[in-house]
Image (tube, rainbow, N blue to C red):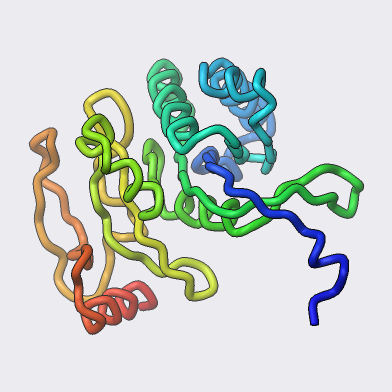
Length: 233
């Protein structure tokens, strides 16, 4: 029987943008400080960030090498914010940033330091999605992609990368957002090496890529299991 305390937890659907700096732990202390300050200015300068903050519809969760932004407004807000950030990063080649987006349940909690914090599957899955990426990637979960692909302006940016098994055996189906101005079309490193021989593909920029054969929508259960086995090796 659930306790009275747990029954009081109130969840809401949050549209989460998770951001971090790739290779942050390898930087010198002063480099870490400089890059965090630059990233903070870029994020705070994004129009979607300012609009959501002014409307009281933004929650922030710092993580040391980045952070999570939880938008309470609409699904497009974190996507538009990610695009703004990606464009602004063009003039900061020293900053290697990746981003992940997911919509799911979140709730505000108080941590051991009596500080406001955010928890819930929405945060956890957004981080798992981001963790699959390399520098420059804007990755979104299938839940987000399913909503975005209903609109022509987003459908053209979505590239299906298939399913991947992440921490604790959780599987996420991810897409990358890309056009000539934003994002990274390369298949993430974590998805490249799977069981069997890799297949050759050509990107929109005409570059030859060695990419994994990934199970897309409609793949059989056996194909999914084979893919997962390859990731475990």
